[in-house]
Length: 341
Image 1 (cartoon, helix red, strand yellow):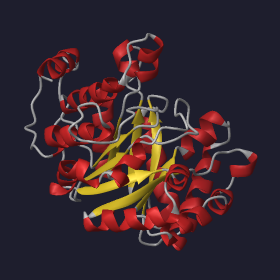
Image 2 (cartoon, helix red, strand yellow):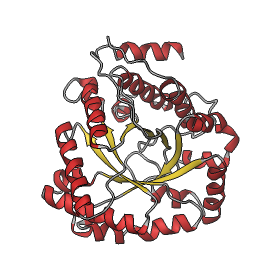
Image 3 (tube, one colour):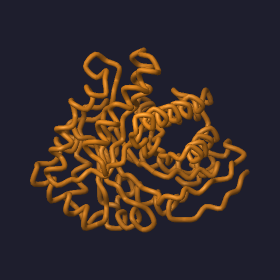
Image 4 (cartoon, one colour):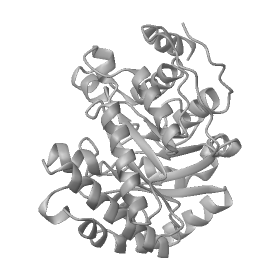
């Protein structure tokens, strides 16, 4: 373990010059989103790491304690995975378990896409709300929704206008606010596909549109950073991510960061990836962002890449639970002293 961390830290030494961190007034959150069965690329239908957390509650006690010691703990997934992995009775049982552990439940969901069948906010709402209602009716009250990339999908992937992305995303949020008034709603967008100035401008304009509609704005901006680009030196850097964190604080929108393993697919093609790759990459990212005094309001450990294969036990050094436990102990629970190289 020491050798592993030493290698990670040494590999991050090219990062330089930290920025002073700003404290968020709200209590920080830790979202854990273990891998589950498809339909995402690389996710085999037999992958049931998600189910381990329900079947083996005694195997992640320390992880739960670390998630809730100083932060709000959130267990999250997608509607597809939850309804595929759990029966209604199991959902009710798992909901009671999470409640007893003081852990909330969240969903990552679709939003407007700019495609003919997902073009408007009403389209996106109508195609999903019954599934959300069904999940809640089966005993999993939804604490928060994270919309999967409406701006990137509408503008970059489907070549619609920015104005359309703002208008229809706002319309979707308005419908969600009306139907789920107590739930948090946030946006996930990719970097460096989108630049920091683009992301800041998007958040400001979306918030302004929602204010104009007399609708509460988004509760967080969640960054999906493919930091493989940093390793290759072609685009993106951790200081930009820190700048986005600070800009979000100035706007008044909590900053959320996904910690994951973007080079896993490349390593697998090279024949050097296994379950330990997930752990190594997550801790590597933790060190990298800490080096610029990064301190997100939400730490999101999320795998949609079909690894690791084991959700528990936390005593398994390559399980998803262990990555959350060690990450929390290293980067969430210990106070960080701002400093630079």
